[in-house]
Image (cartoon, rainbow, N blue to C red):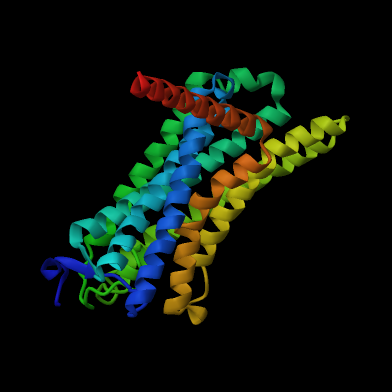
Length: 323
């Protein structure tokens, strides 16, 4: 293939050529995907239905769960279909859509994690100004800014990547369309424009990471000054899940994108991609629900309410049949 105009589809990396292992990977990915849908769906439903959780922290958590669903829904469904039907192809438009939505959701999620660190900083370090600085309108504006940032970055990188001439075939060494793997297909030196944009993005992301670190330094200093042990425990219980999610998200992305080329390999790239695109959306609901008693109580209340409604419907249906 001489240039990108002749490419109508890309070939994704298969995990294995053995049919039994392909089906095993399908069921494994299906289980992970359903777990992510269930966990994030329960968090979204619980926060939306419980009036006690209509606070800035849980509003941002609801947005985070929506973005987690977007990240994992961008990559896994197509991979599962390929495993099930024993195919490798993805259309040119489908590949561009994967790049766009993955970058959109990932960038918006990172921006939202920065907003959430600011929320925790104000709640613990400046509690008297919390209502003023984080009113309902301010929260909506911050969440909208996070989504808009993801949209702009996704448009920029997708347009840059797919405007490059691709002269080295159409085989992408990844189970989904990933920008670094697509850049390997471009002509010599033609990828420098997108590479520069990626470097600038990394620098901006690093600056935001420093902001998160400095925020948590101030948070932990304030928490350690709280006189009561119960107060310190409550403060830590609201901060540690967010810090764990930030560490998981940034750590997996850094491992995937900033590892030295000398240790890069096809299998390692595959593992790194699974870590940053599949692991965080799946385990984030567990991280937030394990130490958050208010969320667990609201979730239990929602589940028991649903079970009671189902039992009531079953009883009435049984009575109707008997009558």
